[in-house]
Image (cartoon, one colour):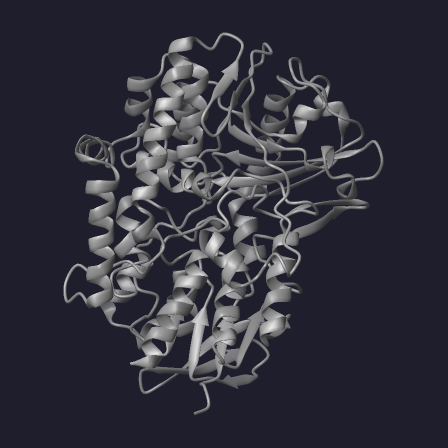
Length: 517
């Protein structure tokens, strides 16, 4: 029997992953990508003459090993790069290096060093206990099928017997509270607490005191189960290139510059798509790598949806809070207390939890942070192909930069960029004089250029009410949707954002399982 023709909307990494799994199963698959190249947020861009940099995502910390193995990405040329640690910068040079299991730095007490090891061991165990939920379609809470029951059984086993009784109780206590209180219980050193608090909040409309930031920290920490964070040589586009080669080898057809304007609905079923130029492509299955609001409210249209379901989609919190900034530098930047080789690491500016919370306070009122928390990488330190000789490129994630700035980004853009430069200048000697070019993508720019509603990294907040069996909303949490033949495969679906490939893999498995029934 001929397999149904599949169209995948969007050639981001999850779209490529999903398409490849389906093609390997014998389905004819075509990816339609609006931009002139695939990769989406996981891409490398030509930033300035002679300079290249990862466009949005710039640190690889959670690519799923099952995806790598099952799609044979190593044969396709995958090179994740060398491991990087996180260095929390201190203006006086008393920097702290946070590794997977150890923290080092001048002034770190033996008590805090021991507490860090205990903390990471505990939280790694919590993250591992959630793996049955992360790696499978989220189970329904009613009318469960056999796979839903199996997932719950595996999760229960991991929590009860994988963690043990005492650790399970501690996990249940911590799961719904804020990271601020947890870190105060573990540590005395403000630098350690600030660095961990930043990782719990980065990419979200949350501060350290926001409930469920323990959950967002666990979601970010999950990547350490798979291996250390890395900076891929050639930028994140190198990951996309491996995925592209695997997709093409599997027989996936890919069209770029093909923006979808509508999902074609016939008798409540998806039967193809309509491109912006008016071209219609018929298909039995349509898979959307776009965010949920784009998929349902724009491409499908509310006339094809139940009013309550449309309301739930409309209510998804998707406003981004991070600006992406790139600088070209005319020399190697210098910072007291770090060697030039250490500048290859992931560096952050989040001195303490109060600093992070205060930065978030501005976003509550539609303002950008006057003292933003920053994640910095200088990938050209270890990858000379990204910049001309003796020159460098710096990539920054800057929070908080709310999507709907009260003054508007046309007015606020220069002010926020100026503050970012000034904050970095408090750590790097003569930094402002080294900048030769800059680019800043606000959440508004990210929305427009990458076609992500709200410009949110994760296609929506990863708070407890928008996670697991409630992601993106009740009625489409298992990758299929109220529209027969329409599926989700992107970061809007479980388990959310990050360059993991898990949503794409799980969506493909869901489609294949439903096709067999």
